[in-house]
Image (cartoon, rainbow, N blue to C red; front, side, top):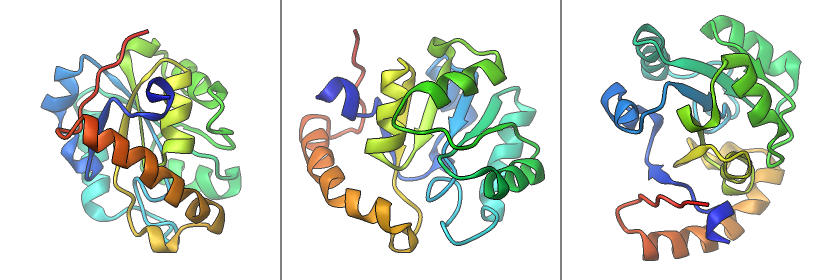
Length: 175
């Protein structure tokens, strides 16, 4: 179970993923979930500090791609406004969307991370694609889509086990 449901790293916010921290992970590509990871579900754009964080990573040479289960008419305008490529209708937790994102970025799995707020979508998809996974605390989960909210109690069970075994929020699994 751990191999697929546990993230490799858990943080409170994407803002904790500094250039130095990402360099220490030896990665240069980020596949980023959108809703409740980069922005509130009901908002059109991320907060200014998230936009600045994205710009600083781009300027530092990191490759970024949005990875969302959302539809194109909602995700494409956001991607365009941020100047990022995107994979919409990613069908997470299936790993195909992650693989499409890696292809878009021209990045091998060992040089990439999947960053998201959902264990049963983002983390599972990244782990199935053999990409390092980073779980972030969701931004305003009370605004989420109903389908996501019904999964949250099950995620709490997994997270309780994760934090018990890895209180520092870091777990490096190997195949």
